[in-house]
Length: 291
Image (cartoon, rainbow, N blue to C red; front, side):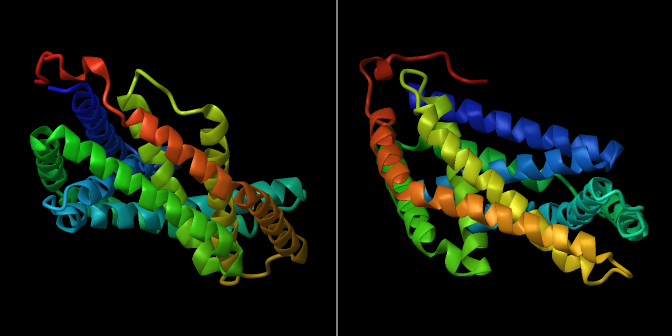
């Protein structure tokens, strides 16, 4: 089996293992760290499956993603409340306020934890395993030239989309949310290809700004979500409202600066991806099959 396919399959198997382990962990404890780990593992898996569906039109991407969509959504409802509580608590600490605002979310978090436990007990991870087996089969049977061509097309389209969103991102919250999701998917799958091509590496000076962009977009999103939630809470101090607004504005300023770099960065990333995805002389050496 050719090196690129071998390494991609190994990377994908690790994604599956991480998701399975995270699911087992939240069955034991639904604390914030475990829910976060589950969500991240599912996001990475979802990004890879979406990439595969773009590379291989015969792979039923939408049907595969549906098998764990409900798990992702249920975990997201609990995760949102946990983030809002944590963010409000940290602002209260900064402003030396009592925790009367953040404490209002505690009963809702407990209620959502009970709802999530009931959901996970009824949820079968068999569908996720079936999706992963199907994805691996499609990767194993795909011709290498088709894989390389498909990956180049996927990243060209993805980086073009990021460039367009970079120009339009500050025009509305909707576009910024689209940019946040696209940047995260691009970063996850760039990491996948980088790890699957050990003969050459992507430049860190290109990866770091993209990682910083998706990080700042995530922080901005958390503040937007928390600020909106605070409207449903009682007697929120004006100083706390101002702090949330100020921090949101600061993140937007950082995002604006990073977006100005994105078109040039996307062009350079595409050039490097062409290098990573170029055939290597040792590629046709037969390797030990994966178990």
